[in-house]
Image 1 (spheres, rainbow, N blue to C red):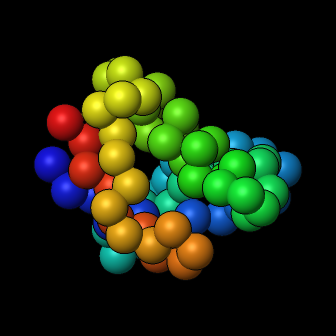
Image 2 (cartoon, rainbow, N blue to C red):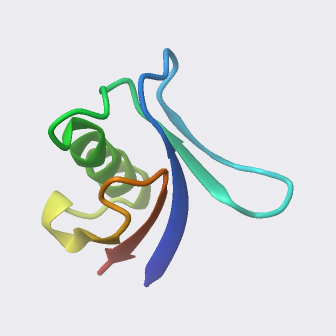
Image 3 (cartoon, rainbow, N blue to C red):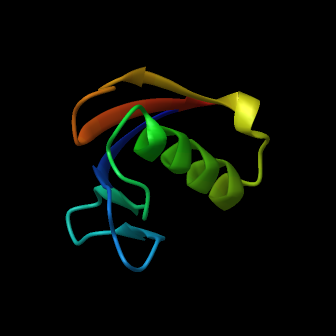
Length: 72
């Protein structure tokens, strides 16, 4: 399943939310340096969907707030 998200690094309260338009927002408290926020987003999505971290793959948006993940 491909999933488009909007990432929010350096957040005080890490969480996953869906807004009124249906977009998924992932808030992580890791900084957007050296891929730390991407790794934290992978961990958060894996925990949320109850799959291993290896099954969550970042397809697009490594340096963007708009990201596409594949969850298998």
